[in-house]
Length: 253
Length: 253
Image (cartoon, rainbow over all chains, first blue to last red; front, side, top):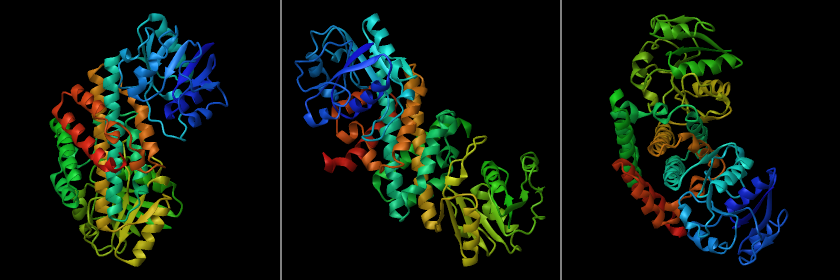
């Protein structure tokens, strides 16, 4: 039985705990956080504490706090023997102060109140000690089938890639919505297309899945589209993205 | 029973026919196209012809050919009484030459060999005659629950919005893949995130769903990301999209 303590009471912490509760051979022995109200939500299934100087002894400490607070929170665990693992995509392993450092990074976007199926979420783990690597792998496999040992440099790049496919893609949805609203059309009309676009690249490489005027170098359609746009940012984006797509496919034309 | 003739033998034509076969009260009485080999694929369930001067009499003629060929193909139908409807997002109703003009535009990306559930695909229809509007609505409802009367200007804008949420989003996936490959990481790791990003905005408005360093105006993370990029296009895109997201959310900070 792996004993774990979770530090932090935010969105990620809640999603992780929900997954750990269901895991065999894992026991959440404590959830620690500053915010009393948030902390109460964990009391149904775990002892809770708001005292960072009274953290229980565990095999793994999962730090699920904001990037800026990781180092500071980890200092409270300097005398512990268990693995101290943060959960951030962007932060280096060495941000963890205690010697038995680790990373336990679930690569997903978590929304308050929206449940996710952890089984398919990639969990990227990292540690300095061989024994710790093994333990984090066991912990990751207890909640996911999609487990990867990734070093800090790879994780940083992966996090950057995630910004493109998640944050920037979401902005494309935002622009799509704005264009619909300008014409009094419901954004709902685009939702099936958005889903299919995401589903398509589950089996087809993005380059092969690319369609549209820019891929075909269909200048007439592109000029027509630019005439419809009146927002400077949208115009610049349209030109830049069309050029980039065109360049990626120019050898085919 | 609505009798229809489908003109064109490409991807969209195949997907449409697959849906129409299952529809009650609709009969495909002919599929017309130039390419003999493509045409043969329709012969299991419909008479076929490669002679555009021997088109059968139908209630609706569905033109599913490339944008540039719509006008020309429609000319072969100048003596017909039925509705002549094209299927393009970008082309005006008036590109159809015969008087009984129409548009029957399924808003989706269609992949060869990948079946889609037509029931949820928005079908945007348009016509000049009231009677024709009714007929196209009946035809649309025979294969989809998601049917909308949309004029040519709205459709053009909708098509532009689709370029952002489909073509440009797919390019974001392409960049994400490139960044993974640089570090020897499998693109598979990003696939659950890509799906969840698309699923999220089915219920949450894109603006509310936005996350990431740009929304938080987290300059440290953004500078770190820019240092990792070495492709000029990716750098320009990162800056432009981060600024746009930041601007859309600046009042919150």
